[in-house]
Amino acid sequence: MNVSAVLNVAQRTSAWKNGFAADSVRALIAHHLDVEISRVADGAHFIDDLGADWLDRLELMILIEEQFLAGEITGNDADQMEVVGDLIRYVEGMIVRDGCTAPTPVTP
Image (cartoon, rainbow, N blue to C red; front, side):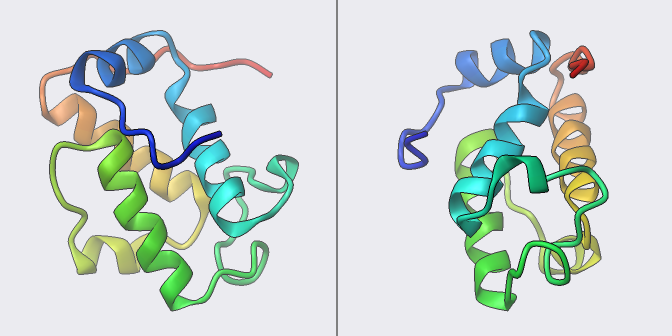
């Protein structure tokens, strides 16, 4: 996955509508933290389970903003995201708030 490739707004919206966003967020996390994607479950803790330090988390938030959001993740919001599921729900909420439809759940 090329994390430097930024999705345009239409691509982001399409991805959310087709239910691929959660998997895309997981893939970006796995790539950035250099872990197997199977470890990036909703309940995986960024620090304890995935080995992220504060700089990894900061860089990850910036990547998420660039890839999926039109806005910025505040420091307070970022501090409250301790597990992968928190981040996915946050991104979904931001997309819904900005007027896109909620993603269709992806079944494994």
